[in-house]
Image (cartoon, rainbow, N blue to C red; front, side, top):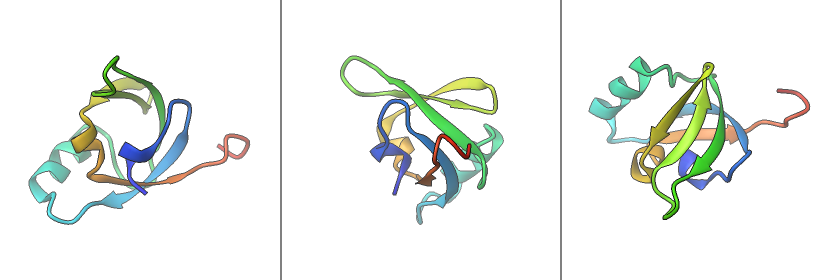
Length: 80
């Protein structure tokens, strides 16, 4: 599953990156989007792009094609 597929309010943990995103992966890593990091989808722009996520205590906006580069797994809100 990719970050692009999540809905508002979903909690997820980053599991890795899509293949072919080597240069973009470095940029994501420097923004704190590392494997194991928990994220929450907070909102989408009116036309659905970009999306805003909460990660490590700050808000970050990503275009949906950028979000497709992040592989995630859903996290149960009770165990988060």
